[in-house]
Image 1: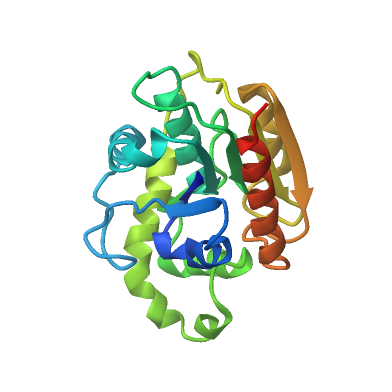
Image 2: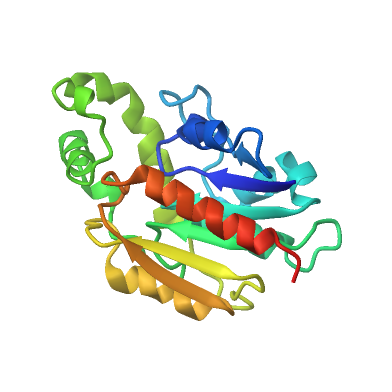
Length: 235
């Protein structure tokens, strides 16, 4: 059994991967959703405000999974976190080496995110979320319902913006798979392609859709499962 440890996007929660868990139930993959600590799910504030402390918390929280066969997957902000977890446990004898690192709709850690959250009003931030497909259709017409969720989202985006990349030993030593979205308005193509310098081997592919792959979410899920299963096979 291989664990697929999943890291969600900014402002999200572990429940993002509930459908992934349902799809993988009874198979050779155990989908585990990393839950970032918050004072309240979705409407609270993030407990950790810097990536170093958060990554250490995640590694300790999921130590059991990271000591066994596993693949790391992250979407958007989750891609950064998955990468940092891979770096953190790489070479540490207390943990197993990741079979693969998979990131989707995520900018290269060597580059800055495209969004400066502190330069956006709440209205502008919601407009951006709608534009990139991050708001369910039933909430688009009820923007006032989104207000309680914005502080947590801002915390996550601010943490990403505050990340300062350490170029020393920044390449991961596990197979790196990068999935970009052809219509992503948040992560530019050069930010996706920038992952190529961070590992060996690296594969980069593009799928239809925007930042959340809304045109074919099942296709993205199936592709990640395919990569995870292939990585788990004996050499």
